[in-house]
Length: 336
Image 1 (cartoon, rainbow, N blue to C red):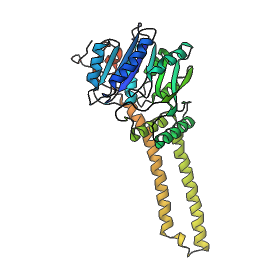
Image 2: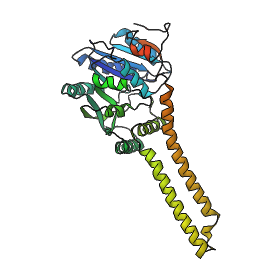
Image 3: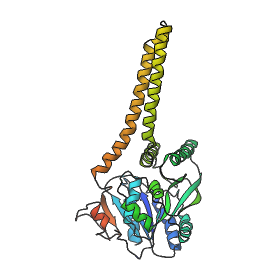
């Protein structure tokens, strides 16, 4: 299934969404690292439906530096899908994923490669400090990662993002996985192999606006829990048992009050309304949890491609992913 060019040893994947203020500095720092590497290297940029000048800047980099390749989505598909597209097209024996905002320092890549040379197939960057982030962001991230690690079916390391190095064997396995709601760092942990961490202090964003807003972060957190844990489904059962226990207790209490305290105020409409609202809320929570899992099933069975491409630069026109996954038309633009 692998159509990579064997002459490429290192592939660097960077998703980009409205990052025109950062691209020049990002390329300067990444290219300095590329010059230090001991073999051929490619830089794969993925334009995730940017509405600013990001795509034009990517085209210019491709024309100036043949090591720069790029993909441009027909619309915004999201960060995890952009990373997935980069993995589909990357041709290197070693693949590194990092963000464009320079919070993932490119200068850490040589250390990752050293770990790979020692026999590790996955080397992930683990944050030990978050600079210039609000207390709410730090606290919510701390709670989320530890909750996910406790609930997930696999051991997903805490305080790790998508910034990592992966061996070609691992990348091929990720590319072969058909699931659509992708959580790359979870899939990376699921495949196994020898994995190790490199600690780093996360720098503040170089410029521009934060792309992972609270709502997007919450959506990613829910997706990760649904994708790697059956605990929410079990929670529905636990809530059902709890509500049944409370209902039984209420029935006993009401019978007692009717027999021994018929004039008690707690036997009136208020008690009935509280019981109804309690049972109704439990039912809605359970339906919501079931809906999340059913929604995942619905997304999987539709069979649509993960993304559509409007433009590709620096890759073979007959790359298997561009043909099989994206069904591109012959008249689309394929600059060399």
